[in-house]
Amino acid sequence: MIEPISPVARQPADVLGEQPPVRVEPDARARIRAAQVASGRRIAVLDDDPTGSQTVHDVAVVTVLESEEFAAGLAAPGSTCFVLTNTRSLPEDQAVRLNTTVGRALLELGAELNAPIELVSRSDSTLRGHVIAEVHALDAVHHDLTGHSYDGVLLVPAYLEAGRFTAGDVHWARVGDQLLPVGDTEFAHDATFGYRSSNLREFVAEKSGGTIRAADVHSIGLADIRLGGPTRVAEILTGVSRGAFVVVNATDYADLEVVVLGLLQAEASGRAFLCRTGPSFVRALAGLEPKAPLTAAEIWPTRSPGGHGLVVVGSHVGLTSRQVQTARSRGGLTEVELDVATLLDPPGGMPTSRRSPAGSSPPSQTPRRCCTAAAQWSAAQTRLAAWRSPGPSPRPWSRWSAAPARPSRPGWSPRAPSPPTTWPSTA
Image 1 (tube, one colour):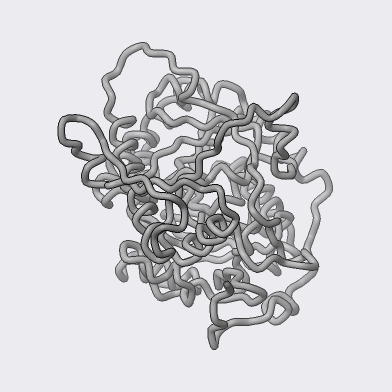
Image 2: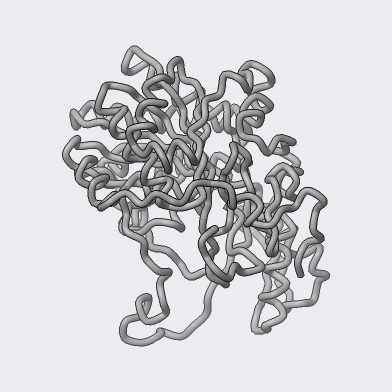
């Protein structure tokens, strides 16, 4: 099922047709990796839900919020580590406290290593999350430990694999074979993180409650990136101060790589930046080569062990409900609906669930209830991980190396000749 086309929907050619051609910097990814290693920089990604690492490979993912785990994940110069905070499922005050605790631990680790720690606040490509509060929390920690605030905050919500990108400062989302300003999608009507603005400069002003003016938000446009290259990006960034937001336009990974090369130039001159991003920017920041999703043969080099698979539904938007219904139509599912209240406070200490054969409940009900259960249980796990008693307890499962998993359909980029009509994730 494809959503009805909105009156503001556009054809991709209408949005992208007047932009300069994509600029491909020679050996961009190798240059980025070499610069990160030479500086000793580590990239620490505070991931506000578990989907952030789906665009990367060969990086550490930490699920237990302890300093020794961060140190293990960031041991090597140039390394990248995702720290799963799950703060999108927490109230704002708890999200701020958790960002403050984790951000402080990561920056203190950088001081111990005498190496820069690049903090990335990874969030939703459709703009949901504690945008302003988490940025302010990390900036406050940085100021407390270094004596100065970040010079700027790069806002880069692109998730290119899912057809979400920024052009003309407007963030777009692919719906069917059309593009919608993200403020006109179902995601903008989120009960917790709803918003109206698709222009990212106006979005920052809206989410700040008026404390930041849209006119005070900087922008790196596609013309800056594609005509001026890294030098122009660095020039814009060196003119940013006092923690101002900078909207980063990008429709292709080549755009993001140019931005990273310019960012590295600006940082080499002594500037400091925080990044608030969607899933795609981290791959460019780490200089990772593209890698196809894992195949069954790569997951099981010898043969499949058989048995069953587990699908946990963690979103309650219509896109997810349609994906669940498609999975149901293929058969072979056994569905378990989790009772959230019982999970969080089980009578007699034993959580309960209700088991039903696939398709026994209306599609509009079971996916939504399952999604809610997954989201709230995720919040409980975050609290347990964050506040468990300190002490030595090696857990090999607390870190793992991420690799892209295969989506139900291939992803889309503006240069792809034949985009799909449904997307793998709501990240």
